Structure formats: C-alpha cells, structure tokens
Length: 82
Image 1: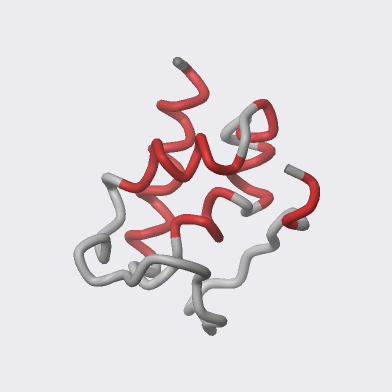
Image 2 (image 1 turned 90 degrees about the horizontal axis):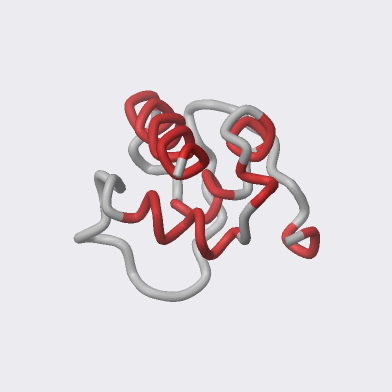
C-alpha cells in the first residue's frame, strides 16, 4: 500500500511540472523506481495506479507512447528490466 501512495504522489508532482509526460514513462522513471519504491512492482502495476491521475488521460491514444521532448529531463530504466 505504501508503494502505491508514494508512486501516486511522485507521479502527481511530475505531472505538475509537465502534464505531457506519458504514464509509462513516469512508471519507468528512475525517480519513481528508486524513491517511490517502484522497483518492487511491475511497470504495468504502477501505470495502472497512476493512470487515474494523468491530466491528459482523456486525450491519449491507446498503444505505444510517442517519442516526446518533455520540459523536464529524467532518466528511465530500460524497458526490458521489468
């Protein structure tokens, strides 16, 4: 339960800085993986937790997220890791 709360708090903060960031990219971000204890969970689980907070959830298309240049820079764990 604590993991979900911290992941949602971090995602919410990141989206305040840049609402265009895709939920999958936030779920794979090193900040969420390390500080939010996201490394304990599958990426799909984290994405499900934070999807309801996504400020653009009504406008995103299903499928692979497009390559994007976000206004903040953060590192992501490789997709094959989890």
